[in-house]
Length: 71
Image (cartoon, rainbow, N blue to C red; front, side, top):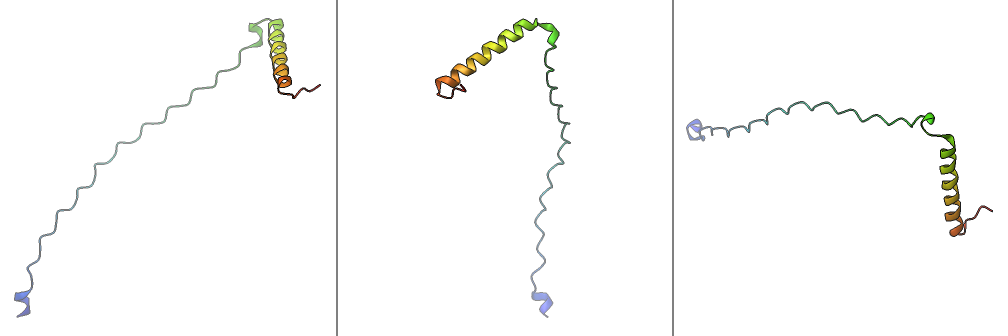
């Protein structure tokens, strides 16, 4: 009979074990809050004006050095 000549069933190879479940991700840390600008009452206004004039003067001179004078 044909049934006797058939190969016996092979044992199935062992199934790969599934990887262990990953632990849940920790919550993302909140980004730091932006630093608020300093209050204008901290410094005298003349100091702020002096710094602004010096900065604008420096920017003008650098522009002129490159030939981009506004005058």
